[in-house]
Image (cartoon, rainbow, N blue to C red):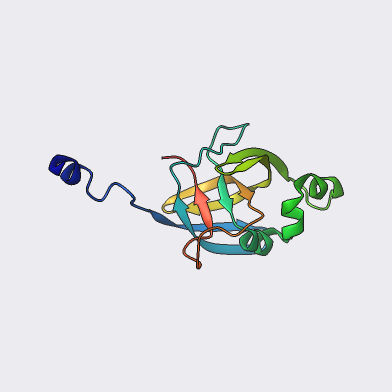
Length: 138
C-alpha cells in the first residue's frame, strides 16, 4: 500500500484549472476552465474536443437566454442566431439530450490558440465560481 501512496501522490483527485479566453463578435470573455478528463464530448465533424461553458457565460458571449439553452430545438427554429448547431450529449445522472453549440473563431486555452466549437450548458458549471467552463480530453 505504501508503494501505491508514493506512486499515485498528487495524481489522484488532482484538478487542473486552465485560463480560457473566448472572443465572439465584439465580446471577449476571460473564464476559468476545469480540465475534465471524463468529458468526451466531441465535434462530430472535426473530432475535436468541445468546450462547454455555463449559462451565464453563454449569455454574456452570445445573448442566448437560459430558456433558449433549455429548449435548444426551439431556439434553433427561431433562426435568430446564425451558425448554431445541436450537439448530442450524455452525462451521469441525466438522460441524453442536445446542447446548442457555436464555432468560436478565437479561443485561447492556456497557450493554445485557434477556433473551437463551444457548447452551452443550460446550467452553471462549478460551485462558488471556481470555474465557468469544462475542457475535454486528457
